[in-house]
Image (cartoon, rainbow, N blue to C red; front, side, top):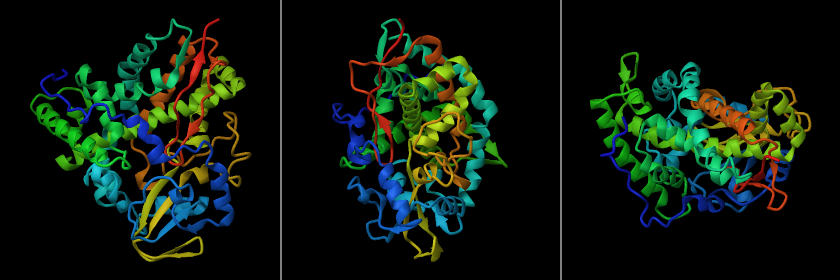
Length: 414
């Protein structure tokens, strides 16, 4: 029931490319893990901020005292104890783009009240049905463009596109708007290019406001209609929270899924014996996804604010301090994982920190896993003898916070 009368507004000027903002915002470092290991050797809680260690990006809350959390016990403590550590830290960046109604900026009880409504829609049994009806058709439509050519760039032609196409179909929006929609979604996190994040948020907000109004008058079975009309305990989502969630959905379910899938494919192509094992036994897809998320999760660092004066890892932390919680440090902790820098789909499966922990664990994690699983099945079904293209540069995952390779050049077939 896509509504053609509601149109999305492009960046001004349209030549702005949000995909080139990654380096400025998240760095161009191929391997931040030696530096993360060195931080852990200094102690579990360090004074300073994570980005400054790499001379990358901007620092919200410049007036606040800052700490870097790299100890696994302390990382878990910060992410799970919302009485001492608040998500208010995100109000200075994500709050200005996704909106102050974003559940990422909230603490309990407000956060829990609204999260219950989102969870009702993103339950695994609902998400699994989207795999057949939405995810598979998107994956195959994209692959049809290159499947007979014997070569491709899996980032530019596949992984960068398909999560946004999935969301677009979930929202039941006009096909003509999909590229602008994706560009605005990515642009919301470009805080280093003056005004771009705010421009993207404003234009998406205008779009979603008209869309929600239309779907309340003419509801369908699309995700916007479900979000606008679902209630829990007699309560609907306020418009501020709903518009913020729709903005954030583009990044939480689109940007991070594209990054995670790209990293998964990079790791398997760089370890062809493990890719071959998955070809022979597709039950290994699930552990491969979890290992990729652990080994180089698409979001290495999360942020919290100390709600009270407290002590963490033997370090006194004043109220109002900002904490850079390096989930990537826990995911590569040698006390938790044997040979943690090695990608190994056969390792013992323990829970990683890439979807966070505690009250703010990712509400879209089930959808992300479905999308990554369906992508792997499509790769195995349609790209026989998949391997890296020896005549082109090898993929290299880059970034200190949001991680992704720019290209994955491959050949397939005979």
